Length: 157
Image (cartoon, rainbow, N blue to C red):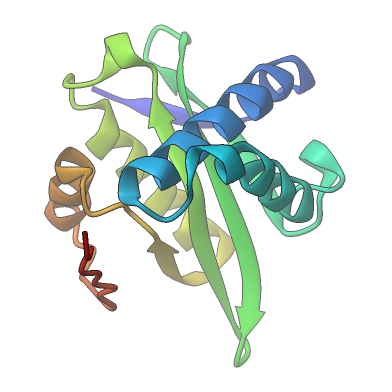
């Protein structure tokens, strides 16, 4: 199984942007970070800060993940920065279309990203994953990511 990372088109970006704001807001509610009332405005504000110029925003690269039949199967949003004379990247979002999950494309996408990182001279790839997303945590561990931080909460009722 193989995937390719292709630059995201404006049409795909517009579909992705609105839907992802809603999904990001819902994830923060599920994680207990935001109330339902504040979630959507908070998510909108963060996306506007991170992507003020859309696809043309400096240091942000958005890809469409394409399978071996050249069909779009997901997206990958990567931020690249320079730290201590080394390029670092951070995955802001990686998502496979629901019907494409469980087919090995997640691992293939991470391998394609690693190949891209090597080509670009990127020293390190980071990401955030919500603790309740056990499937994603397992995938990232499988492809070599290591835990670097823990944020813990105790809910008092």
